[in-house]
Image 1 (cartoon, helix red, strand yellow):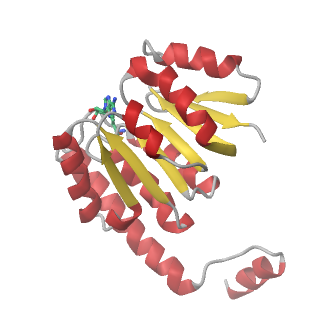
Image 2: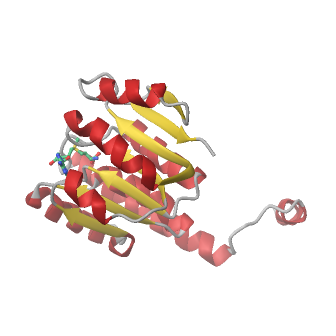
Length: 207
Ligand SMILES: C[S@@+](CC[C@H](N)C(=O)[O-])C[C@H]1O[C@@H](n2cnc3c(N)ncnc32)[C@H](O)[C@@H]1O
């Protein structure tokens, strides 16, 4: 094991110190247990399936995201998947929710998972409140009013850094189809669809 670590270090692979890795694994366990409790205890509302949650975490971590913006917090389930990445990337989540009851539930869930310092829950209509977000955004996730997706696309694109990712949930639903058409017609973007869960469009803003 020690030899493998030395070999990786010599190859220039940066490893977090053992203490930081242990803390990260503890944090991961705590977040995963809250996710499980939420799912089993019916504390989610229209939330992403775990397959999509894992994709959100993986993409945010691969993008070394410092700023993730989420439209549609609900009770914080997908936000917690992002936090699994953000606790390691040193990033933060800004998440928008129009329903005060769900925003309050999300805040409680973020607290229970010990990630409240990583997350800002913004209450109100994201179509208006997005104006408060400053560039650069590394990853943006749209999972709210489907008829609003095209407006979110147009508002988020200028905030997204080159090489950043725009994620849109529920491909196939009305509204999301319009979004996909607009994203696919834009030569500055490259889009694929991940279909293990409920259909996630993954769009790269080319450099
Ligand atoms: C599908 S749920 C989000 C699920 C969440 N991403 C998850 O996986 O746990 C959609 C949420 O978007 C919120 N929403 C709808 N329109 C909105 C708007 N204009 N601004 C902010 N939030 C909105 C709804 O109240 C609802 O809680």
